Image 1 (cartoon, rainbow, N blue to C red):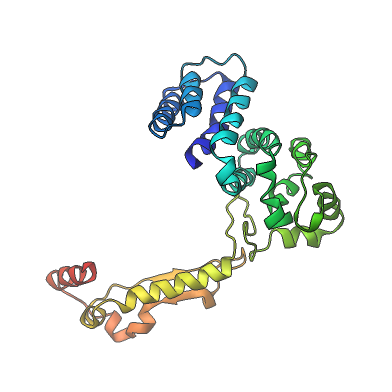
Image 2 (cartoon, helix red, strand yellow):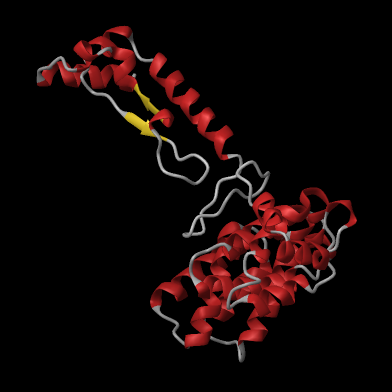
Length: 270
C-alpha cells in the first residue's frame, strides 16, 4: 500500500512534464508485477497502462488511482492511507504537496477515508491547516471544503476558523505529544510523542550496552555519544547520552592492540 500510494505524486508529475523516463517506467512496471502477485488486478492494469503511456489525460489516471485505493485499501487501511497522504502534505517540496492535494480531494470523498477523523479529530487536519496561509491555500481549502467532521462533532470549516483566529490552536494541533503528527520541521519531517520516543531510545541503547560482556566493556576503547533532538530545538547537553561516562575516563582511553580490538568486536557480535 505504502509503495503504491507514495508513487502516485511522482506519476502525476511525470504526466505533467510528459517525461516518462526509464526510472519512472521501471517503477510502474515493478508495481504492476507486485500488484499482480498479490491479486490486485486493478492496480496491475493501472500501472501497466501508465508505463505504456496509454492514459489520454492526467485526470483519467488520477481517477483510476483513487478508485484502486478505495477498492483495495480504504476498507481495512483507511487510517494508514489518510495519514500517509497527509504526511506528504508536510513535504518540503511544493510539487509533492500539490499532487498529494489532488489525491486527497478525491480520497476524502469516501466515507471510509473520513472515519479516522472521528478517532483522532483535528490533529489529522493539521497538515492542511498549515497551508491555508501559503500559495497552496486554494488547493488546501478545496480539500477542507469536503464534508469533513472531526471528533466531538466539529466540522473542518469550524476548525479552520479557529486556526485562523487563534495561533495557539495551530500549536496544539502540531504538538510533539500528538498521537499522529509531531511538530513539523522545515523539511516536513515530524515525530509524534518525540519526548516519549527519545526516552525509549535511551533506555534501549543502555539495555543493549548492558548485554555486552563485562570484559569487553573494560578493554574496549570504543565509545559513542548519542544526541536526541527535543521539542524541535537544538541538541542540549542534558539530552546527550555517553557511554564513556559509564566506562570511566581511564578505561575509555586505554589503548588496544589490533588483535584485542578484533577480539572485542567478536564478543560484541556474539
